[in-house]
Length: 172
Image 1 (cartoon, rainbow, N blue to C red):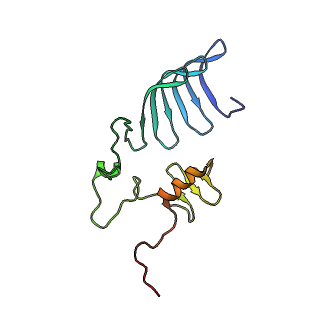
Image 2 (image 1 turned 60 degrees about the vertical axis):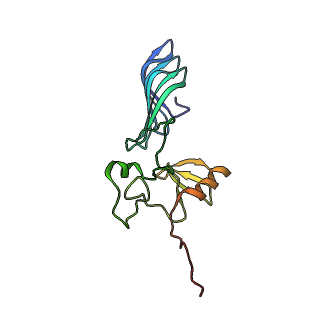
Image 3 (image 1 turned 90 degrees about the vertical axis):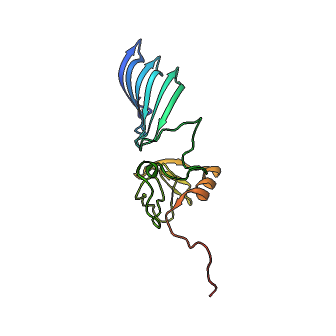
């Protein structure tokens, strides 16, 4: 634990983490559930700093079945996922609370949307600097370096921290 920065609160059997437990990772992600032989085993939930959670049944550290719930209550369904797809482009908050009046756009599920620093992108779990290729969480802490594929995806699809003129530009 001292080398990884993790914290374990729970029972031990023969020196191994076993029984009801709470395991806190250095990222502040927290597992609450059953452990066996030092691994997630049985019923357990991962709580993420963003407020989302993953409820699962684990076997020897691997997920047998589980369900991911976003911080706003939307549950991910791998078999029947139609959220914000070509069929229905509404955000979950719009599904729950209705659409905005004509002329008022909702840019993200969070309303009002998060303020993005100039020159950065909002990639969903933090802000991305395309110059350094670093993703930092919304509190400014390092999350990861983006590889070429992630960089291309973020630049192509994510909200920018600056305005760009769209459409016709008159000649001067």
